[in-house]
Length: 241
Image 1 (cartoon, helix red, strand yellow):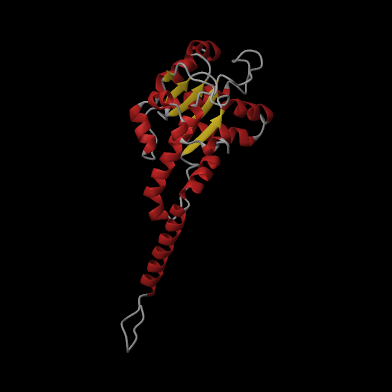
Image 2 (cartoon, rainbow, N blue to C red):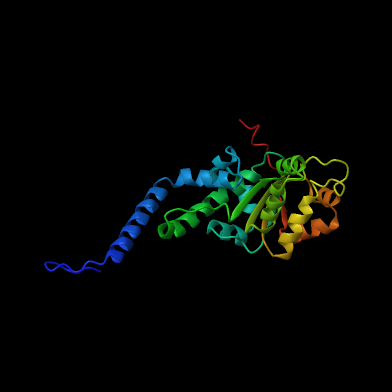
């Protein structure tokens, strides 16, 4: 602090803090003014494809909306991880992935409105990982010996909220238990089950077929902690004009 004989004392620390607060307010205002753009960028950063990141809740079939468990849905819409996860099953192209992404986008916006004023900006990639499982299996298979693959699997096992899209559609070489890349799903689900971390997932495969594909132990942990809701009668929205 310095003293001016002709004026009040000046606290440079206070001025610096005030300037920092004002800068943060400006950053927050800029962020919120472009919230839609930041939302789409956040989804892509978390693993959602550019096409899926355009998902709009208004275009999601009502049956898909109603299928999402209310308590878990409310938690996500408030920008936090639910206590339990859930699965959405139904015919190909029925809007399941679009439904989840549209909810996650609203959740990010709720999170941003809460956190941005204090921080100026936010990132959701430490909170959420969105994985298309068939594509992930292909990457694991191609880079099996890389340290980055081990780190990636550990990340999916511990991220607060994980979305596994299109379970059961991955290409399996031989049997599931003999395919090292595909069977890494066991490692991920087992770790998340033991640590009580929620997983959201989608599938086009009927539950009885999934149980046969993955085996009783994995199916019990996946569906037991994150119950599958099968939505009947979905139309392929990709083919509807």
